[in-house]
Amino acid sequence: MTRALPYSLIATDLDGTLLGGGSAGESISARSRAALAAAREAGAEHIVVTGRPVPQVRYLLDGLGYRGLAVCGQGAQVYDAAADRLVSSVPMDRELADLALAKIEAEIGEVYAAVNREGVDAEMLIGPGYLMWHSHLPTVRVASRDELWSAPINKVLMQHAELDDDELTRAARAVVGDLVNVTMAGKHTVELQPLGIDKSSGLALAAGQLGFSGRHTIAFGDMPNDIPMFRWAAHGVAMANAHEELRAVADEITLSNEDDGVAVVLERLFP
Image 1 (tube, rainbow, N blue to C red):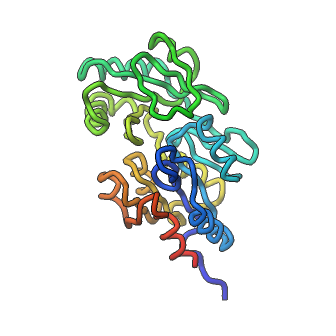
Image 2 (cartoon, rainbow, N blue to C red):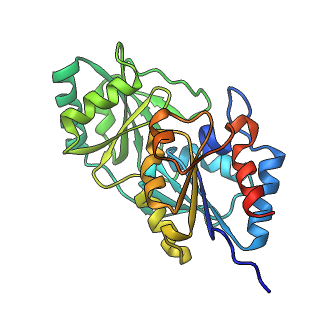
Image 3 (cartoon, rainbow, N blue to C red):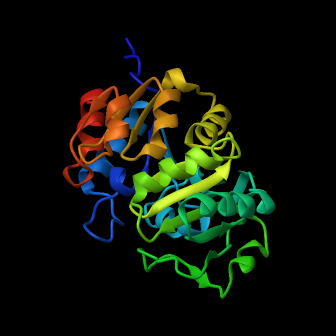
């Protein structure tokens, strides 16, 4: 008798969730690789769901031997890793992005901004004052904010000199939450995207192409940007290192990413 799968789709965030490797955060442990392989052998599918845009994740997926669909850019992009092409991509209106920043600055003072451009090979443009925390990412510095809007984009990233990530997220959401989606995706990573675009929208699209829905899905994450994905999935698993907002809505809390928390759960479900 064939044993029914507990979940047919495994959705994993990358940074702080599936990836470990210390400060670089660029590796998957042998144990996590084995647990994912066992789940796939049992018949489950794995989808990466990350805030990183495609240009910042392509090399990583290639190094992992990942050949499936990946949800990137905080849900704005669905990328076919095997074909190296975008299945779908939702741009952000640049005039609206500029207006949103202006409204936020009218309330809390100057913010420093960067943007992710549209496309598989597109650069991340860094505006004046914005500090990069991951030196391996492909970036181009520009001299003025106006240059950020010179080509199509899919999201805006913000920083503030005094407010921390949670404070900046709350302040921005209070001002422009009816215009754009405001999310906190990680350390020094507060982002603006089109309304309706988040990890759940991208995951629903990718899962639908594979014939799955939320009731088939278990999701793993560590940051508030994973909350929509948890609400869409049948079961949400937060890492021990997860942000308190995600822990509050999780169905289960596992070990940290450095302690193979994803593998611990998958080994139980797919022995």
